[in-house]
Length: 202
Image (cartoon, rainbow, N blue to C red; front, side, top):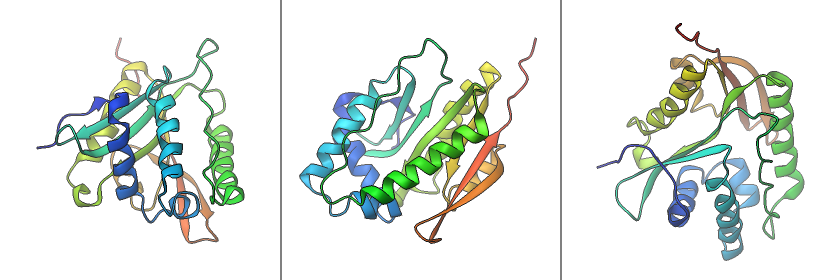
């Protein structure tokens, strides 16, 4: 039986990596940077997740059905301030990755993020993935609601870049579509979505 969302620990990293490849095996970034899945690719993810799980600005959440398998995962970044520690840099891309492609895509998404949000405080859902066999069973919704409840408590906006499959769920939870961007020569669309801040009750 799936657990409730909890913060990931370093011991969860191998299971998160397995869940990532199950959830995103056909994503253009996965295909161009992380396939075939080699020891070097796993080492990249292990190093990246080690930093992200310990990042004080972020909340890396998982849902499991036991100690060995992660069913769903998501990363929320809380609003940054002038005193926030710097965001951990990504490791070097694994050998064989299409570096020009992945850096162009990540760079374009980050540029659009900054254009839309500027310096406004907001919660940012950087990634949300669910194993294929568990999609449509409400696990992604739990991870989404975890961050939205905190954004609402703070009276802050929430922002994300959604896949075509994920955008309808986000719309149900109050996100508005602002812009779209084609990647991989138009074979995939990224949808930039914003959820307005909720007024804090006095």
